[in-house]
Every structure is written in C-alpha cells, then in structure tokens.
Image (cartoon, rainbow, N blue to C red; front, side, top):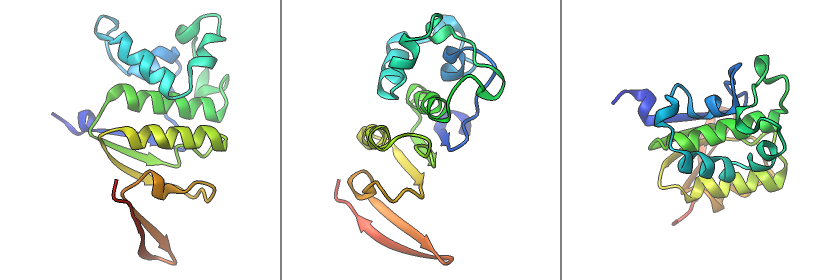
Length: 153
C-alpha cells in the first residue's frame, strides 16, 4: 500500500480537475468500481447534495477550468467528499472550512470528528471551538508551540 492509499488531504485551495463532479470525487476510479452507496454518503455528509440536486447533469456536471463555475465553498466540499469517499486512515485538513459559513464549517468538523481516523488539522478560524472535535490541540504562536487542550473523546 503506497502513501496515496493511506492519506487524504483536504486543502484550503482544493485540487479540482476539469472533469465531472463525480470524477473529482472518486479520482481515477473506473466507473465499474465506484461504490455508489459510499459516494452518495460522501456527497450527503459533505453538504454537496443540494448543489448536485440543482444541477441539470447532477454529479456528471463538468467543472470548468480551475473550478470557475463553482464557489470556493463548493470546491472545498468536493474535496471533503473526496476524502470521505476515499476513506483513508489519515486525513490532513488544511484550512478546509475557510470558505464555508460557520454552520457548515461546524457540521464538517462534526463529520470529521465522528470518523475513526487520525486527523491532523490546521486552522486559523477563531469562531469554532475545536476542543469539541479534536483530542489534542497545539497552538503555534510566535514560533512556539503550546498544548492548549486535551479532549478525552
């Protein structure tokens, strides 16, 4: 098993390809191998359902260059759906909710926290209490680290 199969990355600036929403979620998986139950669960949990339901072509809608036909939040949710679909043991989360409203950001943090995964998250948001979602929080300030919370999850 290589590193690609063990780690998912959810970034502030998602890697979005000029292809369908479906292809952007399942990344390189043959259509015959797609687990549509798992796909639909990832779409629902990432908050993409309403977007996809309102598109004429649904998840077969083609994303234009650099996601120009999507908002930043929609692109982040596609990348979140990709991580949920991929189901890796380790998820690196780098400002993954920065383009989402507070309610959606909290919902996504709740989803990540419910997974039996190792999560490494980087965030500058101050409007979310991350101690609810993560077992250990380390704050980096002035090039120094300080453990500020341990949650007995």
